Amino acid sequence: MPCKRIDYTSGNDWQAIDDWLCQRKDPDTNVDGIVRDILENVRTNGDAALVEYTRKFDCPNLTEKTLRVPAETIRAALDEIPESDRAILEESIHNIRKFHQNQKEKSWWTTEADGTILGQLVRPVDRVGLYVPGGQGGETPLISSLIMNAVPAQVAGVQEISVMSPPRKDGTLNPYILATAALLELDEIRLSGSAWAIGALAFGTQTIAPCDVIAGPGNIFVATAKAQLIGQIGIDMFAGPSEIAILADHTATPEWLAADMLSQAEHDPLAASILVTPDKELGKAVCKELANQTKALPRSEIAAASLEKWGAVITVPDIATGTEIINKLAPEHLELAMADPWSVLGSIRHAGAIFMGHHSPEPVGDYFAGPNHVLPTLRTVRFSSALSVQTFVKKSSVIATSPSYVREHGDKIARLARLEGLEAHARSVECRNK
Image 1: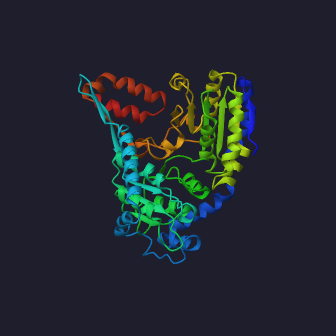
Image 2 (image 1 turned 45 degrees about the vertical axis):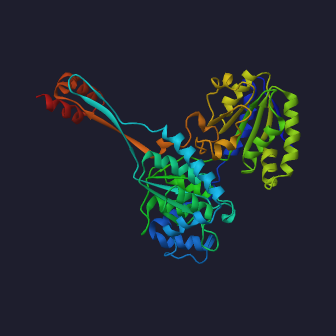
Image 3 (image 1 turned 90 degrees about the vertical axis):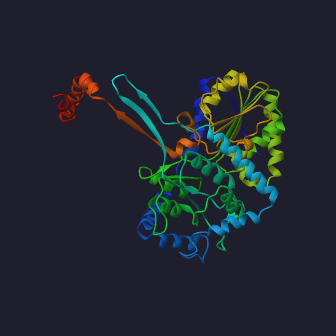
């Protein structure tokens, strides 16, 4: 199985790498019109449109009455999964909630001697919609996506959370999705998927209230629907294909590095897995491990396709040059697989999540440690951050100026307004000083 071998010695070598990776960004514009029509149908026909699409693509027997999962069905799912799995889910939710509690921001105020009060109110949005893909016909439920999206919304203080997930052919959801929802104390779940589910969350229907923010991963139809609705709702982020970059020194274990690269390659043929190292022998050994380990994976075809087109071992002259190219790659996930990762951390400017040392593989963050696994991709970490509590809050400025403040500064404010040709602005201030 081929994997690109690239030498990088300075910034002069970057353009070729950038040109290669930019090909992952090509949008599939063929679905734009299809999604636009779907959204308009849902806006116009509401629940009837949801049932129409769901019958066609997922469950032929769905009705408007069975669109919503009964609360008792959600709770009953806890008895359908092993106690040991329930305990793991509870611990994962606890860890993720504890981490996100540290992200909460407080409203704040400042006061001046003249009585002026300035401040900022931090408040949650009223209602959030979460999309949870069914995963291979409902047999590989994306329970971690539900947890990672629901917990920060709850920590933010959101009072209403509505979940959408496509049903299996028999009209049910995987019990693990339902059990996870029960553990999260979510009781509003509807059986609908793809772009029509996103439309229902955005516009509302006869039985669904519209949402302020929509979050959750999905296919090109889900991503396109969210993109077309920007300006009407808030979304989590533009989700591109997964990616991992690993900066490794001679102390790294080839078997582990290959396993970590494959943890992303198995997601999607467009996933990118890149090793950066000054150790050429390590790079060769990792390539051999990749070939061996890929064959043993259930998703071997996906992983092999990903590695062939978007996998690479990049050899650099030293670790400092390695950090330079890492910052240019600006990866979603970054592993610092080296003896002293902390000595390098200060040089890393662009990475969605950073995994330190030989015993912090990327899946630790995906499922359990606490930080959010919804991360910017396609180099957008240069200007954006992981999904967080801040995704589900908004901030209002508060201005309470006193009469003395307006007397002291009114002429200045009026002058600035007139420089912009806004006479009414100027007079609004000046009339208070007559």
